[in-house]
Length: 302
Image 1: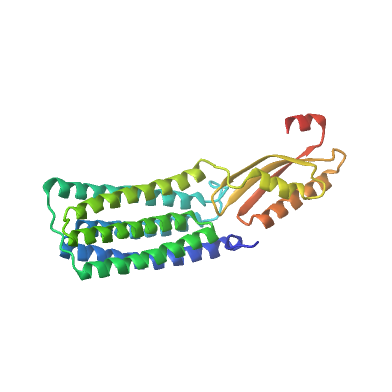
Image 2: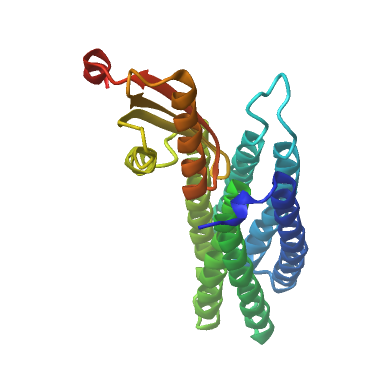
């Protein structure tokens, strides 16, 4: 089935950029609302959540830079293109999450150690938090769907970042409720809970990026084998390998054919296999087919 990954690279890039710009504006509004109200009400958890949201906007900026670099065409120095710059961008987002966790965590520990519980909770606190929570959930859902559809690591990393902000907001709302119920210590404690969520989000971002940078297999070999062996003349397929980013996968495989077959006909089978794989997996950018004669020696090495 066709997906948006099949679109020209410049079209995909424009769509990702448009999404990131919209999310950046929304994240700025959310960060300003939470942090300013947190300052006014002396709520450590609201201020921490506002800082987390501010790092969301920095992540959007990193994403815009990363996707712009990734869209550059292949050149002599980068014959496979620049798509991994998108992955590097997601790593920077992960680093920003770690910095946010440090800022939030150290602030919460300081308040707990000094007993500085000055949060003032009112109806306005809950209005701000619930409103920004709704925005975060909507944004992360849209980003996640777009990231999956476009095969974008940047959008998926940013969606994880934004969703962690939503989880944090839920924790802050619970903490504010406890403060209102007479447990002022709950405010910095929930700020520590915020720190844990931020760290978990960073781990997920790094894990996804390292899968790409370590050339982790992108498509199950057996899936590609079925497609390739479905081409008439392909006797046996083996040594199937894949690597690349989610949106740009590179495939190489070995195919045994009749040893009496002409080079021209064997080459034609290779072209058919490439076309069949790209039709079945639109994220595949290039397929390298190694044609080998179907002999006992080659069978033994397969």
